[in-house]
Image (cartoon, rainbow, N blue to C red; front, side, top):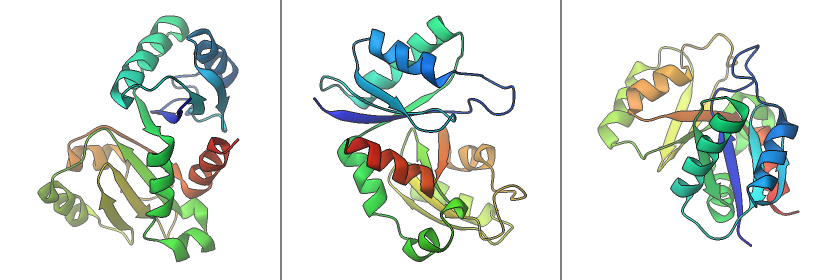
Length: 180
C-alpha cells in the first residue's frame, strides 16, 4: 500500500488550533488508513492508503478533521517518493549538517511562478537564503527563525499559495518513518 506524509498547517501553536496527535491517529485509522503514525506535536503524520491523488487525500483529511476534531486547517500531502525527493534535492546540505533547526522546508499547495519567486527573494530583508524548487522551498535562517521577518505569512503572500514549513530535523524524522 502506498505511503504518504501529511502535514497540518498551523496547529498546536500555543493554544491555537489544538489537535491531539492520538486523536488524529485514531481518526485516520477509523477512515481506513494503514498504520498512521505521528511525529512530534506539530501536525505531522505518515500513513498508508490505497493509491489516490494527494489532492483527494488533502480534501478527505481536512474535511474529517474539521468535522470530527472541530479544527479547520489545511493539509499538505506528499507521496513517499515525493518526500524522498524533498530530502534528496536539498540544496543546503552543509547547512543541514551544521544546524538542521535553521533549515526549513516550506511545503506549498501550488508551484509558484518564477516572477513570484523573484518577488519573495526581493522581499528578504535579513540574512536568509532561499531556493524554490517546484512546490517546495528550502530556506536557511542563519540568525534563527524566531526573529526573522521571513514568516510563513510573507512567504504565502509573495508566492501566492498556501504553505507550511518544517525544520530539517522533522523532515528527516518523517523520511525515517516512511521506511518503517
